[in-house]
Length: 279
Image (cartoon, rainbow, N blue to C red; front, side):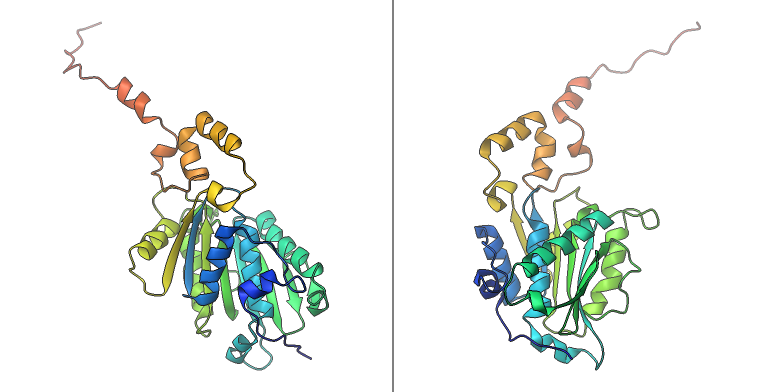
């Protein structure tokens, strides 16, 4: 028999030691507050080691356990899903592991777990938290009340190539349609200026979609445990890589690999060379 917990706010669940009991960093708190209040679509551009996966796992658990009103949108006997899509199987299972760790240490939530595998947690209230590697075929037809795309700027498969993120978006976003209060989160470190992630981020920043908001933060802003000394060394080692990996800048493909000063130094105005004579 399904067991429903009462409705609890996202930040309230995080702050309550009997529930999720997680000490939020300031940027995490601000972004989760935005998720709790709405709108529907959130685009997070953030540097490496910004706790994207953990933050997304918190949202997934909140949706499964503390939003009982969402169950009114599913058919009798139908299970409601909170789905995370990751770059690969290992990353997907890391998402599930993070969620399991949060639930297992909670005095009130551990008993809510009905069954677990490496890829999902099934709860007694007929909700399921699932994660899988990026694919446009997985989870089609599921009722998804929260969709989390983890590192979606880096989605790539042999079948869909660089269009993988677009295909996943087209396949899974319609699965959230029956939930007026659904949440969709695209979180990633940027990788180039083309593709789904930069397009969504730009649209959100420009206000092109009323129900979408963009968030941007560097590694230093997100994660206070990363030292300034480490970041300074990384910047000195490779300034271009540092710009997109740690500062979450949207750089063109060439900017990530080619030093522009070297290119300009190699190009000189020599005029037109005379034709070569017979050898």
